[in-house]
Image (cartoon, rainbow over all chains, first blue to last red; front, top):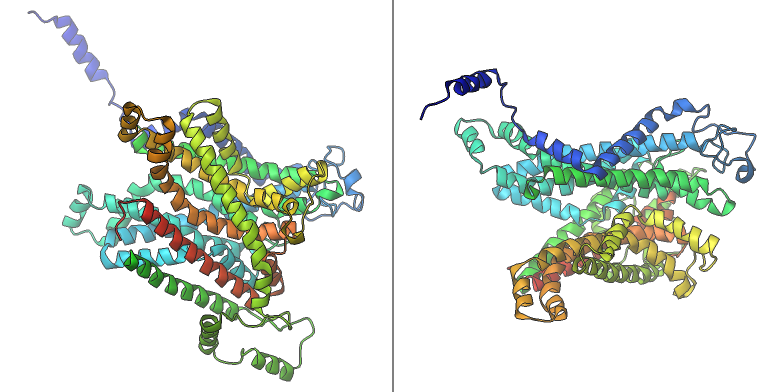
Length: 309
Length: 307
C-alpha cells in the first residue's frame, strides 16, 4: 500500500510545530474539579467578600468600634436602628456604639483566630504526626499514646483555666487554641505517613543516605499537603467555633475588642430590650462564614481525594 | 475481654493524673493567689489563711495531699471563695441538673440523628433524603450558643410558650429549650454519619444477597444493616459526649439552669481555682469512663476487633 507522502509530510510538520504536551498535574486536576463544584466556588467568593469586609470595612464608616454615640445613648431601641442617615448601617448596640464597626472588628478577630489556630495546628500536627509515623516502633507508640491521653482531657475546661490563669488576651487565645487543636491533625498525618514511607522514592532517598529529618521535610511532608489542606480548611471553622464559644461565655477577647462570639453573646443578652439587630448581624456573619468554610472544605476534599475519581 | 478492660483502665489512671497535674500547675502559676483582693490583707492574716488551706506547703506536697484526699474520700477541698462550702457541696448541687438535661440531650441527639440518617439512606434521592441532608447541613452551623438565643427569641419572646430560663425542679417546660439547644448540632452530625455509613452498608454484597433471597425489607434493615452501620456512629459518641458536656456550660449560663457550668464560669470569673479544678477533674473522669464504655461497646459490636 502506498503511503500518502503528502499526509506524512503534514503529520511530520504538525508534530514538529506542536508545542510540548501540557501535562496534567495532580494540583491542576484538583483545581479543575474544585472549579466545577458550584457550592464551593460560591462559598469562596462570599468568604473573600467577608475577608475584604473585615479588612477594609472600617474605612466606610466614621464610627470606630469603641466610640459611643451620645446622641442615641439611652434610647438605642428607638434611635439606634440600622439606617444610613445616622451612619449606623447595622444600628447601634445597647451602649450606643456603632454595630457596623464592631462587626468589622469582630470579624477580623474571629477570622484571625481561626486561621492562626489552624496554622499552628497544621504545623505542629504535621511535624508530630510525620515524625511519629516515619520513625515508627516504640517512639511512635509513645508519641501516639501521648496524643491519646491528651485527647481524653476535656480541653475546653483546661483552655478556660489557662485563660483565667494567664490573663485573657488574643495572644493567649491563639496559644491555647493552637495547643489543643493539633491532636486530630497529628493522627491523620501519621496514618498517611505510614503509607507513604514504604514507597520507592523514600526507599531511594534512604539508600542514598539522606538523613531522616530531611526525608521527612523533603519527601514526606510535600506528599501530605493534599490531606493537610483539606483538614486545615475544616479546622478553621472549628477554631472559630471554639473561640466564639469562649467569647460567648465572656472569657475570650476583652473589650473594646470583640469577636463574633462576643457579639452574639451581647446580642443574645439584649434581645428583650428591643434591639434584635444586635443579634441578627453578627449571627448572619457567623453562620454564613462557617457555611462557606464547610463547603470549601468539602469541595477541597472532593477535589483532592483520589478515591472519588 | 477482661484483659482489655484492665488495660484500658490502666491507661485511664495516668490520664487522670496528667489532668490533675496540669490543672494544679496552672493554678499555682497564676500571678496573685486566690486571696488577693482589692483591699490587701495584712501579711500575717494572709499567711494564716494560706496555712489554713495548706497553700504554704511546697507544691508537690499540696498535690500529693490533693490526690490522696481525692482517692480516699473523693474530697476536692474547700472553695476558696465561699468560706462555708466545699467543692463537693457545690458539685453536688449542680451535677444532678447537668446530668438530667445532658442525658436527655444525648438520647435525643442519638435517636433523632440515627433515625433521620437511616431514613435518608433508605429513601436516597427522594425529598425525604434532601430534607434530612438539608437539616443536617444547616444544623452544623447552629452550635448551642447560637441555638439558645434563637430559641428564646422564638418561643419566649414571640410565641410566649416557654419560660426563658430557670430550672424549677426540672419541669418539662424548663427542659425543652436546653435540650434542643444542646442536642441540635450533634444530632446533625450523627445524622450525617449514619446516612453515609448506612448507604455504604446497603450497597454491600451481603445486603444484595439478602434482598435476592426475598427477605422482607424490615428484616434486612434491622437484622443485617443496622449493626454494621452503627460502628462509625459509636466511635463518634465519645467526641459528642465531650462536646455536650462542654456545651452544658453555655446552657447553664444562658438558661440559668443552675448546673455545674454556671459554677464553672462563675468560679473562672472570680478566680475560685479549687472549684474550677474540681469541676475539670470530675468532667475528665466522666469523659474517660464514657470513652471506656464506648470502646467496649465498639469491641462488642465489631467482631473484627481483638483485644
